[in-house]
Amino acid sequence: MIPTIKQSRFARVTYNAYIALFFVYLALPLVVVSVFAFNDSLFPSLPWEGFTWDWFFGDESPKTGVFNERGIMRSIRTSVFVALCVSVLSVTVGTCNAFLFNRYQFRFSGVLYVLMLLPLVIPGIVLGISILVFSSTVANGVEDSIGWDIEALRPGLLLVILGQFSFITTIVTLVIAARLKRFDTTLEEAALNLGATRLTAIRTITMPYLGPALIGAAVVAFLMSFENFNTTLMLVGSDAPLTIAMFDRLKEGSTPVLNAVSLLLMIGSSLLALVMIAFQKKE
Amino acid sequence: MRAETRLGFFLLLTPLLLWLTLLIIIPHIDMFLISIRERVAVRTYETGFANYLTFFTEPLYLVTFMRTALMSVLATVMTLIIAFPVSYYIAKIAKGRLQSALFLLCLVPFWVSELVRTFGWMILLRETGIFSNLLQFIGIVDGPVEMLYNDTAMMVGLIYTSMLFMVVPLVTTLESLDDSVIEAGYDLGGNAITVTREIVIPHATPGIVSGCIVVFMLSLGNYLTPTMLGGKESLWFTELIYSQFIVRFNWELGAAFGFLLLGLSSFIVWIALRLTGQTLEKTMG
Image (cartoon, rainbow over all chains, first blue to last red; front, top):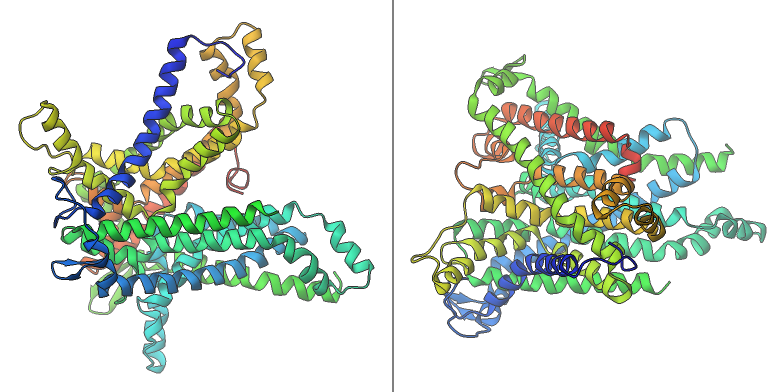
């Protein structure tokens, strides 16, 4: 089953056909979504009514294009804002975590490490409701005792950000820790020998080395936040991020505007992915 | 520790502790406390396990719970069966450019939102969709066929959504398997089946376990795919949690459901780790 071992022609052809079929399966839904963004019809389905850009640039109902659709544009801005906050927060905390587990041997470090991994095995929806329950317990407690109603602790953007941050941080930590593990600490020691302080050594030697991992982690965090659905669903308030806004539309019945948004999303995330790959390659 | 490193240590420890206690540990404890609360009158509560009792006495809840668990296991097994040959191909048969291209192609669908992927399947499977039109065009069926809103459609969606999380760990472990070991297996008289069983699968076990855990978790906790692709009968447990929380505003019962879901997923992950002798740190970290 490896190239150096002879296999019957039949086995080889079947195997290759299976692989081809698999990639068709992977590509099919995405191709279909993209193609129907250009269908000049009110529904994203056959028959094909001709090619149009209306679902992107159209400016009159019923064919309002994405760029003129206020609700969608606002939800995209919300999503970008949330995703930026989540990536900054999670990369900051993730870097601290990576250094902590890499540089210090301390009691309970094993326990803390397992605890740190836990968010990966908690279903997103449970993470969402637990944060929802806790924040409203706190909000109710504050309201009952001193009479302040803290709006921020009710479902809304702050909770969405915290909810996504709570599990994305684990992934970010793992990405950064993986690179930090391969760092040659003697480089840092050399800097210390040459008279640098510990902070200077970390700033000028370790951080530049970690750079690609930090950017990679930030991109991963951004994309995961942008795509997140389960946790966000439970914590969302009045201003919905894109995935939630699209979900609400989809339930009502879809127009090709959703295909157009989807295509833009695909292009956007592929570009981000390319940026990330380019940065990793530069090493 | 010296004073300076001690300070550094606590500065690094604080964010971790804040994150874990405020966003993970205390919320879950609070959720548990809410779940053992019974509403006896407006704003008066008693402690008790009534919510859990409701779960065990109401057949709809129990059946949905079991169904969700079994379907998730099924989705996991099918994802493994579909992904294994592909991962093997990418890791061992494809070389150079083709290898990285195929691997990247596997990742592409997952750079886009799950919503988009589900939407794609809806366009393909629905009554006015591509498959239905194709079948009519070929002449296999006379009228439109509805392929959406049933268990099969939901399964297809679940498997599609979690494929990446199986392929990546499998490719990683399979890549580390030396070709000469496989050759040795053949030299010693093995064939494709025995070599796969005795050499390839044991070597890939860590990858299989971590892939299966992640896929199982994702299927169990999925809300979007069962809601959009599944039918009326394919109710998913997460849909029950959602409706208790958002629609009925019965947080006590919803919290109990959340805890049961968490318990189930932890239990199955634990079993999987025990059976294969792996640890969480090794498979995830």
